[in-house]
Length: 334
Image 1 (spheres, rainbow, N blue to C red):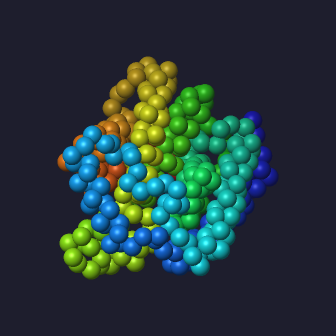
Image 2: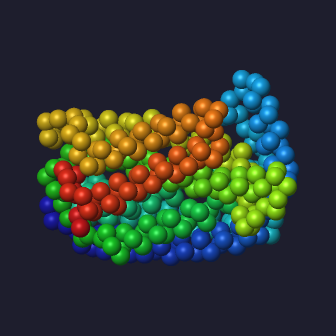
Image 3: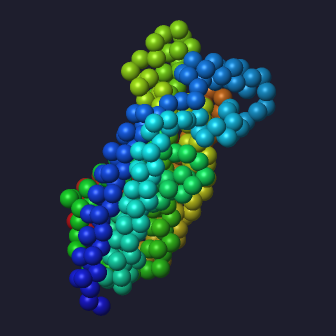
C-alpha cells in the first residue's frame, strides 16, 4: 500500500498547530498561576495536615479519605487569573484536538495504527497527557496544574519533530499484528496518566516542604512562591495516589499483553530483553509506591519520591533503551 503524502503533510501541519496552541496555553496558565491563590494559607494547611495526621495515627482511617472537602474546587481561588486560566484551558482543548487529528491523518496516510515508531508514539503520548488533563478538568478546577502539563506536552511535540521524526511508512513485519493496538495503546494511556501523577507528586513535595517549614516555625522558603498558588499537600498527595492506583492495573495489563505478543512473535513469553526488563522494573517501582502509600512509615515524601522514580524509569526505558540499547524491541524508526 502506498503512502498518501497529502494526508501525511496535513498531519505534520496539525502537529505544528498543536505546538502553537500549547505555547499559548503555557503562557496563559503561567499568568493564571501567578495571579491565583489558595483559599487557605500555608499556616492553615500545615496546622490541618498536622492535626489530621495525629488523628490517623490513632485510628483505622485510610489515606484515600480526603483531609479537606472536595467541594472547595481543590482549595484554589483563581482570582484575577481566572480569565487567563480559561484561555489556557481552551487552548489546551484545541491543541489536544489537533494532536488527535494529526494522529488520525498519520494513520490514514499509511492505512495502519499510528503507533509504529518513536515519533508516532511521542505524538500519542502527548495526546494522552493532554486528553487526560482535559477530561479531569471537566469535573474539577485544575487550571493551577495547566502550566505543568502544557510544558511537558510542548517539549514532547518539539522533541518528536526535531529529533524523532520519520516519514510516514508501512510497519515493519514484526509490528504488523493486532497486538500493536492493544499493547501499545495501553502503554500510551498509562504514560499519559503517569505524567500527570508525577507532576502532582512533584508539586506535593513543593507544598509539603513549605508546610513543614511553617510547622517548624521557619519561613516557607523559596518553595512558597509556588506552594501558595497550588492546593494543600494533603490534597495533592490524594490526587496523585488516586491516579497511580487507578492506572497500575492498566500498566499491569500492558506488560502482560506485551508478553503474550512476544510469545506469538518470538515463541517465548519473556526473554529479559532490555525493554522487557525495564518495563518490569517500572512495574516493580509503581507496585512499591502503592505499597509505600499504604504503609505508615513510607507515606508522604518517601512515597512521592518512589512515584517520581517510577516515572523516571518510564522515561529511561523510552529514550535510553529505545535509542541506545539494541534488542528485539528496536523499532524506534531512527
